[in-house]
Image (tube, rainbow, N blue to C red):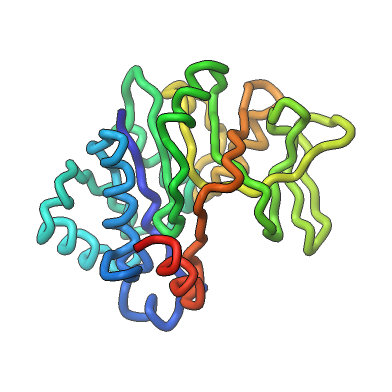
Length: 238
């Protein structure tokens, strides 16, 4: 199985570190976020990993080379010329991820101990187009699910904006964990082009294709999106 780690973001919430470094190389207990996620994938025997780059591209490429990919086969998807976000980044890496098997994507600034074997087993059992981790944690933006964890929409609780793909009553809001299993046919179904978020793709496809949330509430999870979240991450991930 192949994986992709989204590492191309500008990291504007992580200043001042990102004024001179990519967020992917921010350190948590002596290891960069990128190294930690590569080693996380290795626990599940996933060693073919695409890493997309944009912000301080050379720093990431040099660190990967210096450390021999930390034992994994790291393939760089170069987005130096344009920020593509998660959806555009995935689409650009199509030729690197193409195959007959499902593949996984992660965000480099997320640390979790979600059991990938269980997520993959869930995906194989229910056979959706996409499965992704969700939890009960508090956030400002939620995906909305029915009682069977079918994706139905999205909500921003700060602005009250909603986007509904399947109109059902009593939708349940859950937080997105940014750990995703895709069927390879996703590439023939994505209608967006250029710079776009995977959220747009999920909501676009949810009415026609089965997209499921896998609830792993209770697992360790830290969004290392801001400098102050490093301390929380260091308490949980040694």
